[in-house]
Length: 337
Ligand code: G3I
Image (tube, rainbow, N blue to C red; front, side, top):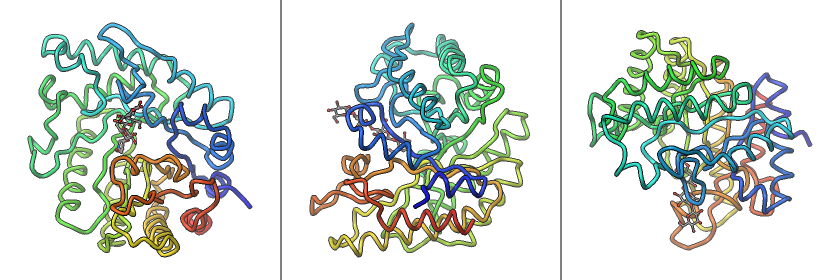
């Protein structure tokens, strides 16, 4: 049976997935399936400033590249393209950040961070999530932007600045703005789509070196408000700004779906297929990545567990690394692209 990466490649597309250093090292069966199925890897934690036991920035003046280097080497050894995730985000900031970073030193800190991290991996990174999740949820609007430490410290120009620094450090990588909540036909997602479009328009008109939008696509299996036409229009509006599009963190939440796993899997698979068949119709879409590959390792067990305490099933492979209906759905979406 042809793998997801092979099916994608046949259509000039990329299939990839998120993985973490610890899981790839401790679970050789997972690592093997990962290499088999994915043509691209995105590190779930290792390139963030500080997340869990991974601390790229142990303090203000130093870097710990051990895990990040390992991820890059793993992907090079196994012919995986690589996505850098992420340079500027309001989450996963180290403990020292709040205490030590101020309006006097923030710009220099960000400059050194981007120059050092992006510079270290020049030629090895397909695309960088330069800025992640900068649009405000509706309750927290400031010029359409989320109130974050970066906004407080540097003002609204921090986004433009980050992209310029990344472009200087690696002129060949695809530079991406990445966000979530863009998927459904409700007022919240509609507002977010509009806000993202106006951010992208603003950046393009300023000459900011931005090349693509990353649509995270954390879908909900119990949502009935996917509207193909609205989503299609959004993708085409993004494409008309001369931007590529990547589906960067796809998974389907089954937190509120019934217990019956066969039923759950059918619903989840349908959500994948409905969404991807529209997405892959748009020529600007170049890649699809899932946020994990196997249900054995997914953020949703921790962050959005089921009430009945049974494990969630959001990804293409089950916890035993066997294909699920979601795998078939993604495969078909690539085959029909
Ligand atoms: O490794 C420690 C472990 O030692 C400790 O016992 C445990 C206690 O909670 O925490 C573990 O670290 C956690 C880590 O995930 C690994 O599970 C961190 O606390 C937790 O904050 C971290 O969460 C990650 C989160 O981003 C924040 O970095 C999730 O795994 C990761 O899936 C999630 O990914 C984000 C994308 O980057 C951006 N888009 C949304 C997406 C989902 O939230």
